[in-house]
View 1 (tube, rainbow, N blue to C red):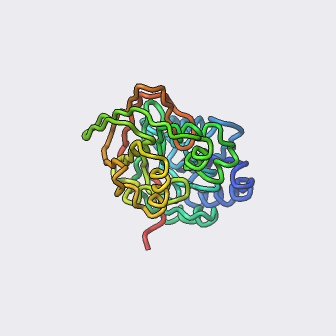
View 2 (spheres, rainbow, N blue to C red):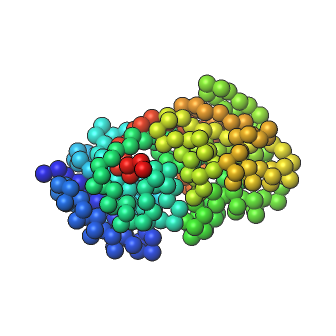
View 3 (cartoon, rainbow, N blue to C red):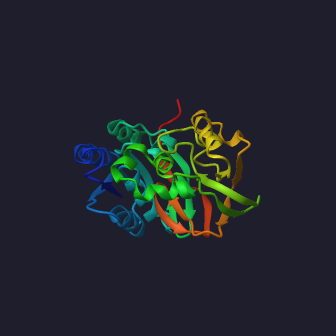
Length: 295
């Protein structure tokens, strides 16, 4: 019999993990998988469980939880010699990665699509020695989110730093940025966004042209400008027109290195990451994930 693991975050989605784990387990058993259940108790558990599934060469791995749980599971799987087929049951508030894959937000519907056995090869982002699935941001606005309450982050998603950052910044804080890639760029910037998918912070308008398997990093460098002009960029974000602004340098690359004369800290999927310099790359079509059939 094929082997599978179900990772459950019991505290995600108002403790919906407990409610839906039985349904998920039953469905996976009906699909022919001898399924072990692993329940997370703290940070790092989902990563460790996913790594165990890879090492034991399980055939199927399912993560049930919010963006944090999904991100941890992917960090446990990425670049492992054996990577199981992956399933996602979203229970969080934002569920960016699931949205980008068109996975239903209702847990029971997300579980039922497993039976369709429709596989999507999906990109994973790598920043230095860790992995991400949505966005990397660099700038004072991004760093402001490190003091944003977790509850607010869970409601607003990774873009919480823009809202909170603008409240906390009394004046704009440009920094010198050098981006080395196929297309180099150097200058004074307010913010750099590196998006992997079209869904960031629950919105699908940051990088509307980004695909989950295009092998590209969609990079938006917001140049130094007067604060009133910066505020005018927010409507362009909502309209999906950020790349069209004269104040934004947009590029699509497979990998890049970013460095600065200042001590800048990257924001990785809403959490504190490494200090610059950083190396970011797209691991093209790195995971096989179960998604709904189109139409």
